Amino acid sequence: MASNPGGGSPRTMTAEKLEHLFLTLTAAMLVVFLGALFWASFGLGMHLPDARGGTIDPTQVRTTAPFDNPGVFQVGDNEWEVVALGSAWAFQPREIRVPAGAKVTFIATATDVIHGFHVEGTKVNFMMIPGQVARIDAEFREPGEHLVICHEYCGAGHHLMYATVYVEEPDWRPEVDEPAAEEPGADTDTGTDTTPASDDPDGEGASPAAATPDAEDRA
Image (cartoon, rainbow, N blue to C red; front, top):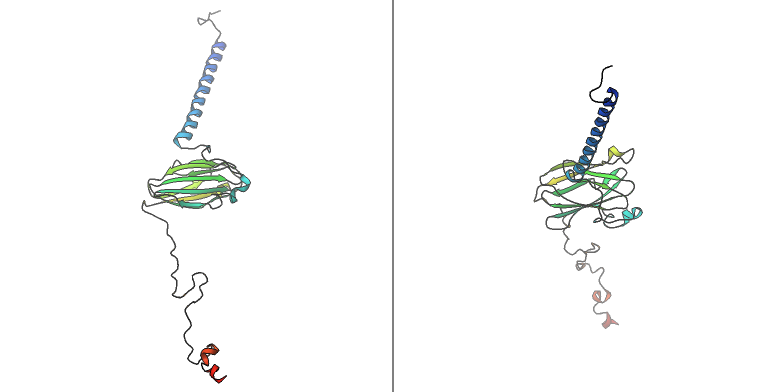
C-alpha cells in the first residue's frame, strides 16, 4: 500500500481545497457588495432622506406648505427650489425648467408609498418616503434634457411614472405674463367706466333744477 507524503487522504485534501474556495468566493462577494453600496451612496449620490429635510404628516401633505403648491420657484439671484410630490403614478411637477449653473434645491416627499427620484445622467438620486422630506442640492452644468424616473417599484403603473428636467441656458428666466393695460377711465376693481357722462343735447336725463332754472320764479 503506497503512503501519502502529505499525511492525509486524497478526499480530505479535496474537501480542504473546496472549503478554501468557498471562503474565498464568500469574501470576494462581500467586498463586491460593500463596494456597490459605497458606489451607490457616494458615486451616484443615492441616499435616504436625512434629518435636514424633516418630517411631515403623510395624510396632510397636500395641505401643508410647501407641498400645497408643488412647482419650480426662483428664490435667489441664481437659486431655485423644486417642490416635488410623488404619488401613484405621477410626479408633480411633470416638467422642471432651471438654468444651467444655478443652485437647485429639491424638496420632495411622497403621499402614498415609497417612490424613487432619479434624474438620468446626473447624481440626483434619492428616495421619496411618506412622512419624510428629502432635501437635495444639485447643479446642472450644461443645458440639456434629462428624464426623471422612479427607481422604486410602486405598483402596476410604476413604468408610467416619469418627469423631465429641462436645463436651459444660464441667462434663461421664466416668462412672466404682463398685466393687461387698463383703459382710461376704467375702474381698476370692476372695470366699470368711470368717465363722466357727456351733456345730453336734448336735455334728457338732466336734473329738474338744471332743466328748469326758472322753476322757482314761476312758483
